Every structure is written in C-alpha cells, then in structure tokens.
Length: 316
Length: 316
Image 1 (spheres, rainbow over the protein chains, first blue to last red):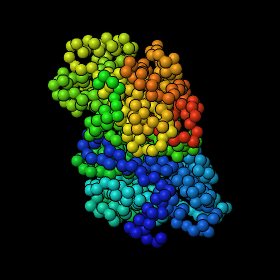
Image 2 (tube, one colour):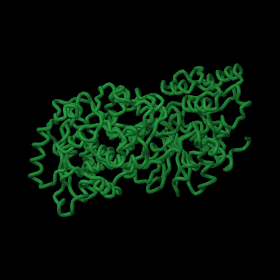
Image 3 (cartoon, rainbow over the protein chains, first blue to last red):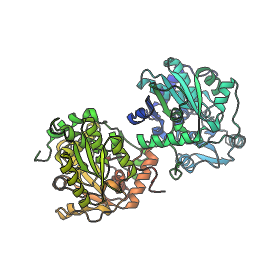
Image 4 (tube, chains in turn red, brown):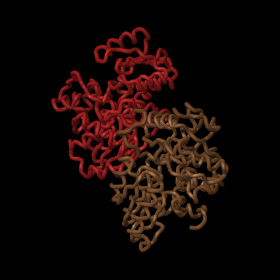
C-alpha cells in the first residue's frame, strides 16, 4: 500500500479482522453526561481482545501476508499494547512474534506479551535504542517488521474502530481519540472523512508529550523530545505516514494536564465501572479541562485500552 | 403479597421496572474460561443504574404503590446499595426516601444516596441499632418501610436479573449469586425454578458471614453473629421470607475465604476490565477455591454490583 487507505481498504480490513476481534460495545453514562452537560458515547476498546484497539491493526497487518511471506515471523518495537496485540495475532496466524520492549515497560504489558508466546528483547526506554535493537532482531530472524503505527495496514485496521462506532451511533458532532504515534487518530480521521464528514475530529494529547499538537499547529512534523506522561501509550511521536493524514483530516488537537488525565480516569472507573488505562482517559480529560466547545454536543470517544498495572493506581 | 412471587408476578415486575433500569449486558472472558476450564457468563449488574442489582427490587417495590399510598415517602435501613437504589427510585417516583445507614458505611455509598436526594440518618453498625433507628424515623415520617430483602416486591424485582439472564443465555448448568440477606438469591432461585428448572442454583457466601450456609445445612434459620468480611454487601442475615425460598429452591451453598474474594475481584478487574465490588466477586471466588464441581460446565454468575471506594483497593 503506497497511499493512505481508502474506504474500500478499511472495509476489507473490517472483514479480514472480524472473526479475530471483539465488536466492542458503546457505553453511555447518564451520570457523566449530567456532570459535563454533553451527550457522550464511549466506544470501549478496553474490552477489545488483548485489552486495546491495537489488536485491530495487528490482526489486519499479519493477515494481509501470505503464508510464505510470513514464515519467519514478525517483529516490532512497542511500549506495550501493540506488542501484546502483535504477539496474539502472530499466534493466531501460527507464526512467531519478536518484540522489542523498553526495559521499563509495565509488568502487566510484559506478561501479556508472554501469555501470547511473544519473544521479548528488552532495550533502553528511548527511540534510538528501540530502533537499533529492532534492527539487530530483524537481521537475525528475517522477521517482517510491523511498525506500531507508521504502516498503512495498521492504520486501516485501527480505522475499523470508528467504522463500527458510526455503524452504531448516528449524527456524532465530534469524534475523539487520544494521539501518540497517530495510528488510531489517523485511522479515525480517514473513516470519518469517508463516512461521516460532518463529524469534527478532535484529538487529545498529554501536554507532557505534545508533539502532535505542536506539529499540527506549526504545520510541520516536530518529533517529541523527552516526553513525560502517565499516559504511557502516548509517549511516541507521529510517523511519516500518520502525520500527513492527521494534518489533513483532523480538525483540532488539544492538550491536557497530568492531573486531568488522572481525574478523568478515576471518574470513568467510578461512574462507569470500567477499567481504562491512563492513555484512554485523555479525551475525557480534555472535556474536564474545558479545552473545546463540547456543551450539548453528541461526542464519540474511543476508549483506547484498559491495560494497567493494578498495583499502581495513579491516585493512590 | 402473602405468598412468594409466582412467575406471573416476576413477569409483571420485569414490565414495571423496564423503563427505569438498564438491561445489563452478559460478558464472557476467554481468558478466565481458560484459567478455570469452565464456560462462564457474567450478568453485569455492576452496570445497573446506581451500580447494583438492588435497583430492580427498589423500583419494583416503589412503583407497586399508588400515589396516595406513597405520599409520605419510603424508608429503610441498608448498608449501602439498597439505600442508593431506593433513593433513586423514590426520586423517580417523586417522593422522599429516608435512609438509615450504619455510620461506617463506605463514603461512596453515602455519596450515592445523597446524589439521589436520599435523607440519611446514621446509626451504629449493628442490626439492633439499625432497626431501632428505623422505627423512630418511621414513626416520625409515616413513610412506608421497604426492607432491603425481606419483602416479596423486592424479591420479585431481584428475580428479574435471572429472567433476563435466561432470555440471553440458554442451557446454563449452574446459576450463581452471592448471598447476604437473600433477596437476589431467593429471586434467582424462584426464576430458575419457573423457567430453567434443569439449572442448578449455587449460592456463595463469605466464610466470615456464613449464616445462610449454616441455616441451609442445619435446615433451620440461624442468624449471623458478629459477621466480618470485606464483602460489605453480605453482612446481613437471611430474613423470614427469603430463608424458606432458599431452603426449598437453592441446590447448594458454599463459603469462601477473604483471600479468595480479593483474588477473584482482582482477576475480574484485570482480565475483564470491569469494576466489581467485593460482594460481587464471591461466586467466582468459590470457583477459584474449587468449592463445587464446575469443570466444563456452563455457569451463569450474577455480578451483583460495582460500588467500591476507589481509595480503598483491597490488595493495596
């Protein structure tokens, strides 16, 4: 694929992955709606297989290859959710997954990769070490690299979350996703452009890892330097494939404080009785911090995942 | 109602409450099924309005009265979930709810009652003080007492959870509920007797509050003495109306340790990404402790509620 996925490609991805993923439910909370005076729909990808939307892209990418192409397995670097999702998809495809993970990855995310028979190589927690370690793994194993977001098959897979969302909920004024590397956001923006162009796409990003925000408003790609946020899924910078899609099809990017992320996460746990990870709380945090015009709007929020170490609750 | 609710009464309750409650989803977890080698269906009453199944009984009881009958409001004593459910139902019925709560009730449960405009009177955390305080409140207000479980309208309301469960899932070998005062359990047992008599009803109870277990096997009503368990919804003893139904229609009662309750609760949080309260973890704890023959069975578990103080996570 040399071009961003078109609608037909996203449809094909949805069919390809259907039997290997959960069609996740859309939840509403009267209580949270009353609190913020908006009509919010939550697409619960925390209930996705392997606990995050990343399963969509990983399955789509791996099942796009022929048996022969994928015989030596796949490899990637990932801070967590893509790692588990890729390991699971490789297991389903009866091939191997070699995963490069930062040595400070959460215990829960490491265990998840191991449960799916992923073969882990640890590296230092920075992009340089991740990339160098991956090059070594790749040359040794001849596995195919599946980048966590800078890959059109991954983007097409992530785009299916918004597709299901629009199939279930009509007339959204706004759709929101968190942004890290931009796989979910670019997929969401493409789907919205194709099937619900009247819906505004608003991304939310931690202020401590605001490369997408800065890139978007500077209109040029500016990578992160020393990002720091509790939202460990959003530490990565945009990629060369995700950035242009986001620049073109996203309407607004807002940033949120760490306090708002924790507050949003806790409110969702308490009122909705669902476990979400900090990254997944970032869009609702933007509403709590009043970062855009949300009053009385119909807003769809993609809850990106629910993988969190239950020994480390951020408000305790 | 002088007799235990018949099937027609449970059907009427289901129609009466329909518009005021959530039809809660049934969740499955491949991961937990693999862990215990059984096929488990979870009826998620933690997603019920006010966060617990108690909403069913409270709405059914309050909407059974005429406007005139209910003009002075309703009153009750409750350690928490019935209190919030009754306050909410009274608000919907545009009448008042006077709630007697033990002074050690959890912060979250007190706040929930206040959010629904319930009028709270605190008492000592024992049955004697609860009953004495309620008598005072009742004589002062002329409100109708709605007992948390020893009331056939309440039992008929709670029975609707199992009704929905059987409408959604066929051929359950076993249905499980936790047992405290026995409202949910007696309702579940009646519904099972009427519409799925081939399904075995197994109740789970904390070993530290095992009056139902002891009563059931002694074949006489034995109230709790100094019950002590983290499952704060299950501290109460059976009632004169719930005990005979349980003795007649329940097949087995098992007890579980506090450790198993906490382990079960954490596993459900971690693997299913849902927040459940300790009381709701008691049936799955019985599986973890191997308390009955569950291997390869189709088991329905009613997750009773999700109201927990998020500042007090039991494993931290």
